[in-house]
Image (tube, rainbow, N blue to C red; front, side, top):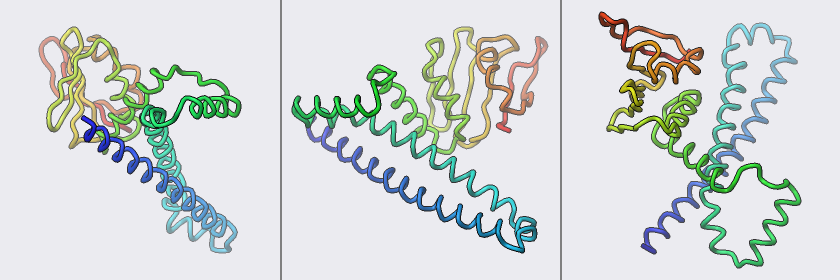
Length: 220
């Protein structure tokens, strides 16, 4: 048991170190990209550069911003998940000193520790289970995991959340931009996914005499 705990602590420390270094590198890369964009905007050949490589000039800062956000979320999740380990290593006097310093600088936390930990764990599990899923889809799958009215059936290449009326939502690992909804219009799965459907383009996969029963949604 002790060996397993020590191994988990070492793995957490390595992950935290990797995310921290990646965040620093992303920050440095951001300065380099911003400098490059400034030089392009100040150049006499600005119009030609945007014509030739405008998608890169505009897209690179946006993709970097997306990367920074993911690293920040992962760093927050790791810090929450590792807080119990770090807390166990400190004497009560040191823990009290840390709590007072954090509270005076940032105020009291708005979430209970248990709520924050569950939130962090759900995000980390979604990122680990669905590493190729776009952020918008990871958010949806994370919320599905937290939905009390669903039953998760996890297979090697897909995950399926079944609702009480036997309608279900499926996500396949090899189709990272798609979510499938099985059930007639108005079913529990259809109603639940309806709040996110505006982000997707819908295709009918299969229809029956009572109406279409399988819907494929592709992220726009």
